[in-house]
Amino acid sequence: MKVAIVHYWLVGMRGGEKVVEALCRMYPQADVFTHVVDRTRLSRELLAHDIRTTFIGRLPGAVRHYKKYLPLMPLALEQLDLRGYDLVISSESGPAKGVLTRADTPHVCYCHSPMRYLWDFYQDYLEEAGWFMRGMMRPWFHYLRMWDAVSAMRVDRYVANSRTVAARIRKHWRRDAVVVTPPVDVGALAPAELSRPAEGAPYLCLGQLVGYKRVDLAVRACTATGRPLVVAGEGEMRHALEVEAGPTVRFVGRLDDNAMRAVYAQSRALLFPGEEDFGMVPVEAMASGRPVIAYGRGGALETVVDGETGLFFDAQDVDALVAALDRFEREEQRFDPLRIAAHARNFSEERFRTEFGAVVEEALRDVAGPGREQALRR
Image (cartoon, rainbow, N blue to C red; front, side, top):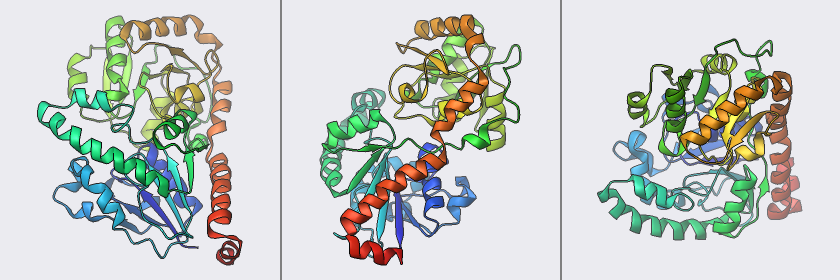
């Protein structure tokens, strides 16, 4: 069976790319299609596959400035020739699902979220843009929303990474979705010995340093109260955050897998102040036995158990986060690393393979038809 996996862009190894990596393990014969690729930042596992780009990848400066080519991406997707494939899986958070397939080729979309900058967070992105970009974004995004809604009908089965995203799919695309949470390598993240953090251990904030992640709240809260904080990750906001940070906040940049496991294990708790579609980082922290202090919206509500594996704060401001830190430190002894790590195992790759595979089986049966399904299996 020939399988095509379509992902929006491959320029790092964040949550969406880790899902693609897991899909490649499920379908080792698959070819991968994307708009742009930075091969220097991909895992060996992904590089072992045939990765093909749309014409976006051949445009000037595409690897660094791919987002500027967003209005061309719908056209680029529709130029991909997928006639020779028996199964198409799209990984959607940017333009990926809008490919054209044969009528008897099942198309299963694993949706991290409908494009946030077109729908839920459109006004936020508009406010952050300069005056020139705001003027360009309004007509561009109007056109992209129309294409996004129309192309949503090309998919045979939707799989959402959380109930939050399933609700967005119903709202914006008027389609139902099965919820299958993303695969997390919980076994690799568990330390040899699950123990409580050392005295004086820092808090941790890990992820891309961009506006919607709200890392600024963690930096301000720990600066104001003198709490130690390690900030791991890179992004456009790093310089501004470093200027704002006090002496108790340390920036360590992008980490490899070994260093990331170490900072999880050596932290007191993870601070997760953004609203995410799902959020793999809290699950990774919990797999390391560390509690999570999270903003109580979005995917964190589906992974963190308040009072058992972490706690929530209900407003995205410094005072609410400081109050949550105070509460956590009063109740810290109730958070058992063994129980936290056991909860994280509910999000393993084995579970993902079973549940996502069941959706693919259904799509093969219903779209390809019984005769062709059996022929493909032979």
